[in-house]
Amino acid sequence: MQLFYSPDIKPNNTQYSFSKEESKHIIRVLRKKENDVLNITDGKGHLYEVTISIADQKNCIVNINNVKKVDAQNYKLHIAIAPTKMNDRIEWFLEKATEIGIHEITPIICDNSERKVIKKERLEKIIHSAMKQSLQMYLPILNDSTSFKEFMLQKLSGQLFIAHCEESNKKTLQESINKATEYTILIGPEGDFSTKEIKNAISNGYMPVSLGNTRLRTETAGIVACHTVALHNN
Image (cartoon, rainbow, N blue to C red; front, side, top):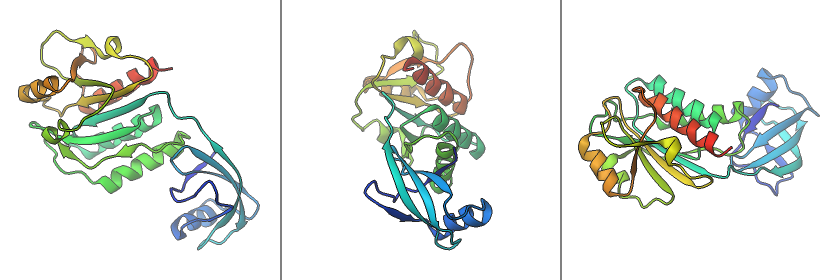
């Protein structure tokens, strides 16, 4: 199944017009024609089966045949992760995390962060593409970047974890998580969280956890955390 993403399509619509850019892609690039059937998601859990009624590369119009609501995951995962020095590494994390299953991502700027600015528009495109490729019906939320200190001011529900590399008495994430709940996991930069940040997180209710016996890159740590939660909830 090939999946298209249209955030402005509504369950009560009977027809829908693609944007000029998407119309050109569908008709000129993919060579779709009238009466061809397409599948669209709004990123909010709906799957639309539609038929092309007007195959115009400037304004492709479809009739909506059927709308199905797809169940969401039985858990919610929010990963707050420090942007990596190399852009392609955080892009890789976002792509793979979306494929595995994640609800929300917040880039956090930490004491040891080497990158403090992100291109949110490009990162959102990575997420959109990964959602379509993996046939997901729910679009993960990408929040604006924020400082670690500001993130600590948020009142979040569910289980809270900070994965860090300092020597301490830590359980693994796998041993610590409960099933079918909400999780927030903090993943630090290449230089790890500072001692001050770790103490701040713990004082705000975050449990320190280990992601294994080896030292992981930031993006790898994010994927291990994401995969651990997904496996635990299968």
